[in-house]
Image (cartoon, rainbow, N blue to C red):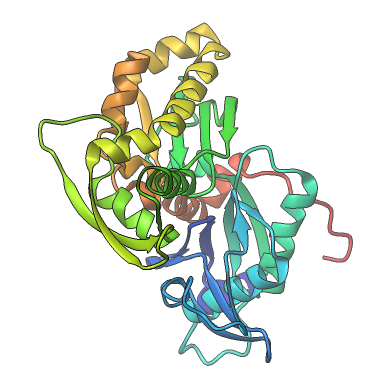
Length: 349
């Protein structure tokens, strides 16, 4: 009876708590939140001024008493207090209009590979403090594979490359478990920094991170095409200190990101080298699946396929693959409970 009450008034939710974006899935409703993982706080009053996209717009534009921060780095919580406030804001937003004092949903939340017990406990504690009734942890590549509808429980090798904002996670999955894997701190945010560094060195122009990300999305690519793409970018001239506008093309941005993309390619190759040959044979036949926001980089799938000599596909809506996977686990928790990580010890829960 109590479980039915909780399910009716506090529907379970799945969360992809990423370095760049946080997505929330609500049982029977689908994805209801897709916001930047950014929080703006008034340091004088400790009041939250904005969360998500509204906070992201404030980056680099605030007075000294407003702190705009990202509470996660490389998928790990670096600011517990701010992360708790952000998660509480999203959970309350999900239950807005239900006339209840405090929502208490069960939460399935994705975490990076190879997190320590301390880091896992931090995620569980943030969920509970933010209003969750119980926290279930799932490794992000596993959630992404489930979200991409890959046959993770079958005795076949499935390879997934999840390129997020803070980390790139490569995993080979078979029989409901991760067989071989590799985690890199080279991901979408790194590519933004590559563009900032390239423009500073070659054009003496200082860019903001948001501008670099816009350039990456607009003309960034991993492999050349017949069409030349150009865009104007504005920043501060490092010599004169005045505003300056320049024209850059896709070849220059590709050159800026080249080293980081090669690092990802090398990690995929190294993961395959440590994978059992039977599973490699399956991967060669079934291909590699790309998920995460970084999978949207133009022609990245073509470059990986050319270099690794294995078919590569980008899953549908790669940005939401992890949260969709968390949602699928929520909908069938009994059948998929084995893909969840064991909880850390909470003696008073």
